[in-house]
Length: 434
Ligand SMILES: *Cc1c(COP(=O)(O)O)cnc(C)c1O
Image (tube, rainbow, N blue to C red):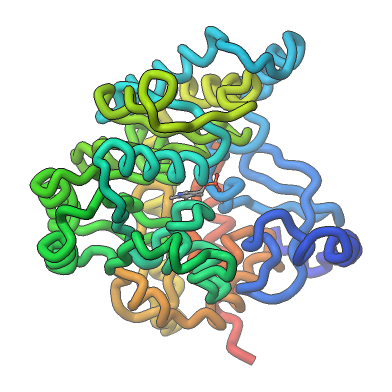
């Protein structure tokens, strides 16, 4: 698989043109490779576990379009469902039977969801969920955790993860102090801190939003004490618990992190896998709360293309496949092998590291202690990660272009793919710092 003669001249030309046309040459910041330096690869095709760039190089894909492609690229059931829908029109702006089916699949899968509303992105889902939490409780304050990313919602763009963390702009210009004054930022996995915040601000807190497994400061695992405190304190103080499962939903388990860990949030946000690669988001929860959304209730939320037939078709095909032929055991097996192999390789080359993994989400952190919050995550050796990243690219393996993004194993990966990835990783980690 090693492609020593790899050239990337066409990627460079396309990206150079892109920089004259789009801010930073991209439509979403992480893609610009700011965290690892160098020129982004420009892709033209995906097939199973592989991505093909415009120079004709191929790469084993561990980004999965940042999560959605859990079945791999061009899964036949998803492709077929899309073709079938294209032949019947693209969008009607009116109810369809397929929306019922996707809603039912979500409700059946995600334990705490009794009613659901489809939207067009994860950002829309979290934005709508916090509006609902505020509308329902009649309170203003939302609690979030440093290093957790909930999309580019103004009031949640404080101490945000993902590219906000990578680029060191956790507080974006354009987000006013007025907008964020009702956002309380706490440390992840800090149950005593949460308790103290409720003791001080309890009657003003509408809800707590969190990533039940963090993906957006690299993969960070929740402690049992933290999950318990979240549910107990929100219930005690009449605030809503909002699990942002945009990344973890249908990823760490079919029913998401709440099924895996056995906790019951009041509201859940979904995205990524739920659209099978098309733009989608969803938020849902107890019927009694969801019925406060317009037109059943008074909390406004709308969307021209919400529940659009193409995204709905791709979502249904993806969820049905995940339900009928669950890949989760195989994902666990391959992911455990990958994590163990990366751990061994880093140990062999005396590299300070720690690995966090939940199912098919994981991160090799270039840091010696377990990463439990953003304070620790922010001290990783990001230069070492960048070298590792480019060493893998040279060997045909596409890992996340930032230390602070989780990698994903997909159902299209094979034992041989994992072997090849580990061989590439051993070589990349052996390469000495310049
Ligand atoms: C990706 C992500 C979002 C934002 O979703 P978009 O579709 O990019 O708007 C929100 N929350 C979490 C946990 C995510 O991983």
